[in-house]
Image (tube, rainbow, N blue to C red; front, side):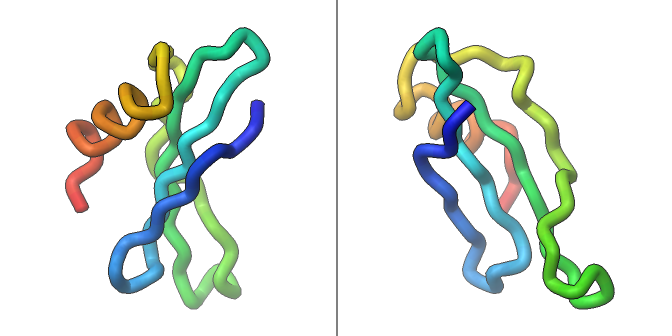
Length: 68
């Protein structure tokens, strides 16, 4: 799995990573970063079971699933 795009919200507290798998399918995961975690990213939304056929399709699916 290779991250192809990482998008952060305006505050830099949340991010979505779009990734491509070895089979060419795409997916995404949502993370948050909290000060009490020393700024490390924590997985909060695992959508990796969803398989999309393109980066654009994964981006659209992320936009529909994630509310920020």
